[in-house]
Image 1: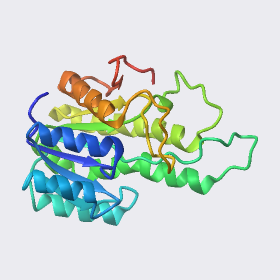
Image 2 (image 1 turned 90 degrees about the vertical axis):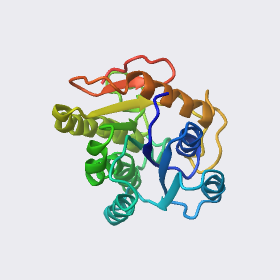
Image 3 (image 1 turned 135 degrees about the vertical axis):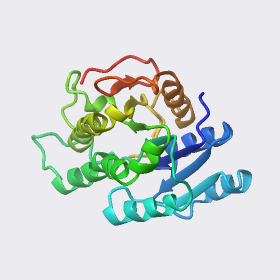
Image 4 (image 1 turned 135 degrees about the horizontal axis):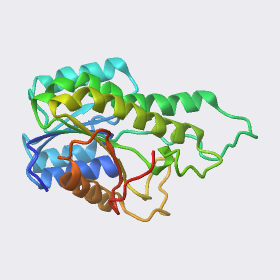
Length: 241
């Protein structure tokens, strides 16, 4: 893995985001962690192990004010970021089809966090990103692929991830002339608590998924392509848009 000095990660409360923070701390980098739960007992434990290298603050990527406050907090700590990882997301309702009663407020909540959250972060942290490694990694999903859509439900999550993919191309188009890149990664089927309770049905643990995400960043993050790379983290296969 390349050595990243300064990395910002969203959604570090648990799961993949927390495991990304742990892996990057273990590799020697300084991590700026943002999550809804603050203070977070696990992050406090890590702060004791890695003093002055883990900085954690409350962050709600669905809130303009919270993102602005987080950006101001980070600016006081570092003028540059080698890497911004937008991991925060909500799952929402996965059972209702168009034939059922649909909760549109839930869909909007998922969209606000899962799609717009990454754009808020890119907007607020553009200067430190472009002062540093010029790389944004957005944790997307195969669920956002129109080319291999197969579900008859998951409206909020699938539509939000598709919107995230489009938003990522727009950000990429703007920063590409100056060497900036956006990398879209699907972490695979991960054991998760995104539904509110632990679901052990996934293929990968959060730690395994985090390792595969970072391996793809190391392998492909330096590539400057016309469009963002949209990859499966476990196989490296390019996903259809």
